[in-house]
Amino acid sequence: MDAYYYLVAGLPDISLEDGKLSYTVDSFKSEIYPELSDKDKKIIDLFYLKFDNDNLLHLLKDKDYAVKAQGLFSADEILSLIDTVKEGDAPDKKYPSYFSKFISEYFTLASEEIYRASDMLTSDYYSYAMKTKNSFVSAWFEFNLNLNNIQSAISARKYKLDVPSVIVGDTEVCEMLRTSNARDFGLGDTLSYLDSIQRISEIDDLVEREKKIDQLKWNWLEIESFFDYFTIERLFVFLLQLEMIERWISLDKDKGNELFRALIQSLKNEVQIPEEFRN
Image 1 (tube, one colour):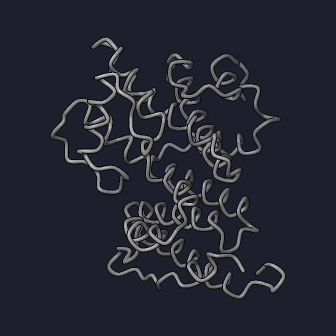
Image 2 (cartoon, rainbow, N blue to C red; image 1 turned 90 degrees about the vertical axis):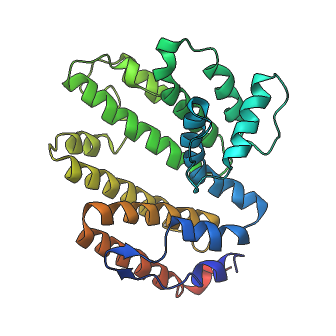
């Protein structure tokens, strides 16, 4: 039986009280994360690093910024890394390699180019995450990069903005989005979810559009992880879906409640999976 069978099966009962989750992304970090192997922590780290990205951007501009606690590194650790890179010393290996790469690039930007910093860091982050040896997690980050870039490209076309300037990353799909004049960017036969993104982009209501995007992500996770029982992939999916539900509750309490209960029921069903999947 998988090492994480009891960990996943033993997840605490989660209940909605006054539209607020009693079990959250923060709960996962404090209760489940410490029980993971070092190898699997590195996979879950890829989720939490987005909070460190935000902290890093702010601390480069304001060393007194109050960092988001969901990140993996404290303000002092990030500030220490910034000083290390500025001094040209070798950074501690506990930091992801793209941190020092980005910090070095940041200090080469002219004042009028600082606006590019966020996109530069996002590009470095996705490139780093997609190199993970876990194929499911790598595919998830590639899916998200494509999803975000396609939405940006469609919006840029709609408002007659420069499409290449809003695309983040250096993949083949990124290049097609930057260069193609076709309605489907030449990706209709490559990305099965392109039509769905295009339809969602036509929705005028911003909240409804956000909910549709989350539903698309949710469906992708459910389909791609269908045979992952009590594995690090299942924990990764649980964490991502938990985050989505937190956002759904802020947008639509009833829909958040519905998704939340579906997630918990799914976990309960997995406790009773067929015997052949338990080895």
